[in-house]
Length: 178
Image (cartoon, rainbow, N blue to C red):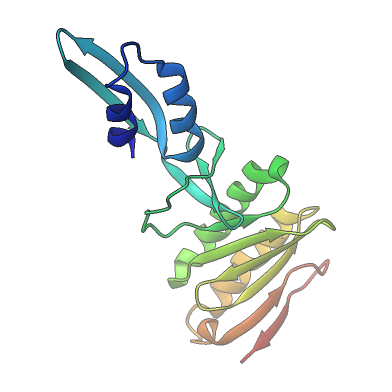
């Protein structure tokens, strides 16, 4: 798309790079774009791409620069965690997903989605379908309970048979097995 957009402007006498770059930044993976004309008809073009950290909602991506982009063509085949919530909480959700993933790595499980409700409840879904429920209020304490639970059950073989884990209780965990 970048090449086609740029080539379409070559027929014009004067190229308005500001209009080209605005379209590129909004609807593609382009993070930075630089073009230099070499006399007579050569151009040196440099393009840097956004590096996605997570999916945001149904069709956006949270990038390494902290912005949300919505590319018109999503040809990325990378596995990213899906984050849902208020846009103002995007960095909190990314941090939470990484903290939980650190614990789930201990038994080869992956965070698929982190959803923050308007009531402050976190629902985390793993690739195998396990649902973990937390609150944002005492998240660190709840994460420690997850760590303790995984340590306790690591060798039991039951970790892969869990349907739901609810950490919202003050001093415990509710577990539902398949």
